[in-house]
Length: 568
Image 1 (cartoon, rainbow, N blue to C red):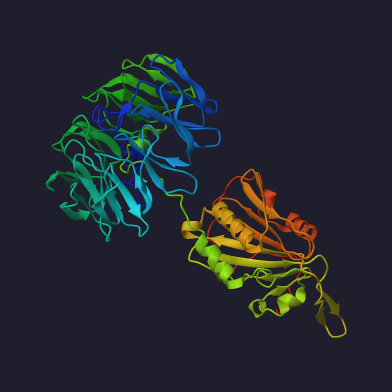
Image 2 (cartoon, one colour):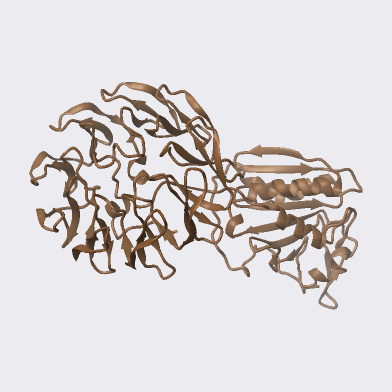
């Protein structure tokens, strides 16, 4: 999704939440408590700096609609009241803040769900891949065909998915993008009221919306009239009658006629919009605050400064945050490591959003089993299988032979989302002897297979569903072979293991969020376990951090030490 506006941070952010323009809007924004971080935990202070809710959360956001979104030590999201008590228990992996009395939440493996402030389900968006929070009683969502539309507070689709991209509704209009990448505006009936013509757009604020024609930026009215012709390198939205603009690499401020009221003279390292009559601006490496006439009220002295909220501004000095009043005096001395991180992202050009975590792995599992499984064998592997079993299976005739390994490196597409990228057959003794008289390798056909490893390549919608795929595979193996599995979780790795007695296949599945491998042992549980300990990509990284995989050429496969012999 394209979620960027123009070139610079302050234009990407476009944070309108803290200004008087939006504090009393339908977002239910409450600033009586400030989220702050001390050490590695977040808590909440009042305007005097006293902790009302002690630091205890992994993350914490402003209160909205009487509730604040927080996460616990495991990163699981819930919602608390202003006493610090959970009103909605932590059980979500993704969530928007509350807006218009509703929030979107996602449980692990679940659909996007809309809840009210009691935590009750209002509706599910089963058709949605993404959903943004409500603005003006409508919420944007993206369907599985990557088209955007809008739903109302009952979950009813009121504007059908048809757009390449959208912005949230502001002042009765929403920016929408057509298939060619041009932006226009629709009303709440879905009627195009400003034709597709802009390269980039902002939401409407105080009756005007910023736009870019690809070269310069200006402002358009709700009738589509160019009120301020494109002439600036970058622009911010209007607030308190003024908009920050960049011209000649310096920041200044214009009125609604496009006339400079504060000439370009400042650096643009902050998010410059007026709040409580003051705005933070940078000069060199330091930030201060100016009034509506461009006069410094608080001289540059801080490394960074947030906008004023209820007469207080968070400033960064001496590697910590404190709070000053409008005269520049500290009301709360610098003592916090971080403060209210969600301000700017919550009220950016795009709205806070969630992504569905639902994925149906049954298509892959059922198709794979239909192709290769019986009630006694899996692929070329049955209890007691030997090297001869692989030789007799034409599917693996192009496999490469190593001293104790047969490797099949041709990717097998099972579904659009999941491939079998590699199949390795492991042995605990050499599978060939070298005849120096004939310069050839003589295969040991009766060498028992100790283990088989299938490595899955997760793509597209399945790219982060390794654990879900593993669980679905476990259930299928259990039903197909009438066995039970032991589940273990260590760090980021989940495993399902079913070690059977001699004469039966043993199984093990290891997975992280992004990786999954399946192990099968046809000749005893001990031999299988020995090979897993030696060769598993995943099992040895139980405490490793999750790292999203990068795309690699399907012809690039694992390296082995000894030279391969001829293929079968």
